[in-house]
Length: 251
Image (cartoon, rainbow, N blue to C red):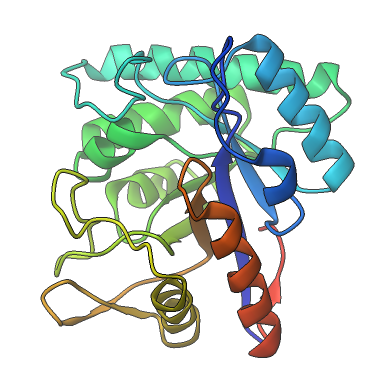
């Protein structure tokens, strides 16, 4: 029986700005990636999201990003490897500390947005991110794009990894995500999202925007909590996995 984790980015509200339907989503996913305050989130949101995750029984992850609240962490930045190491160290350490204060354990780390995408294609940036994670806790699971430098560099350092794929994003022929600057980057149709996720889990492949069949490894599937269809997709994906005898559980 195939086994897959269903993860969701959340904890992205801050101040008076509310985003996502976090509590409801936690009823359908198996792990959550909580914003650490740099691209979204604030201390109160972080604590409350962790407390809800404990009640719902989902695995808790840190979701560090670039220091870019206005751009939601989705704008590329030119930071040195040392700077990337430091911002990841800072954010993951904060999440881990709040987890432990709440009686929970930090399960995984998954970079966010532009940091994720830039590091995926850069061995140096991926190594900096992975080193920061390992220095905090070598037992933490590292989530990164299937086939990317994030996975390769983490494995070189001896971290347990989970190759991630996306139910709500389209792919390029090289296995990378389609840039959000392009009109076909997002999948908004529920049936198309479910079909793509099932193909990735059962056959280890995805159909790129070019029509090519691209090999991919699917240990964990992401849903973006800020998406308009996030809850709808999560419910549909969970139902489809159960119907197809796919075991849904955290890594």
